[in-house]
Length: 224
Image (cartoon, rainbow, N blue to C red; front, side, top):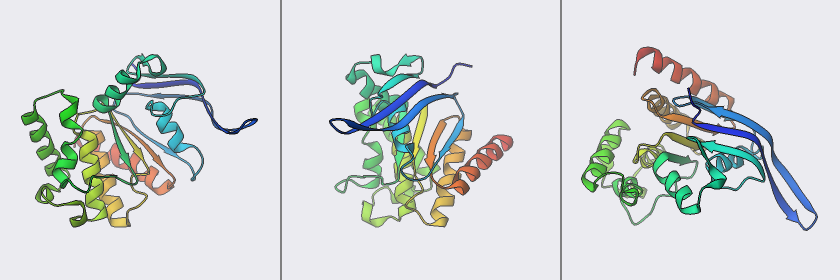
């Protein structure tokens, strides 16, 4: 099976002055296959977010090679790279960054229209399906102050999935949630993965990483 993501000898350093730099990623060799559920665990400051940003092309690497869907990322024009992130990748962050002047449904729709991979009617239908799947359909017209943290994170998941990406990247997506909301979001990510979407998650919590892997395996076994 062809890998969805490959990194070979991936390095990333940040300059902190004229003669000083800090190496964050060192010789990272990594393969992610379609449909996998991958958790990368490490403490804060260990380079998890940097790895996510370099693998997705949001942050330039210092050296090495990153391939996504058989495309070498650093050889792509920026316009092509931006479209790739819009249509083939989804992102869920610890802080969701929803627009205050839009209701929850419109926040989900926001990346769908400019992608132009389907009609506006189809995008609207996709948003409705996702909100049903995540249990927030009744909140469609609410603004972001009329939803809980867990509900807002579900909005972020719907937004990440609106263009049916090949992979969803999660950067500490449960880091700001209470235990009940964390369980709900993890259940949802496991279900999404069982439906065929690759999930690549960054977390500092060993219980979160372990639970996600167990859940994904359980869902596949039961065909959910």
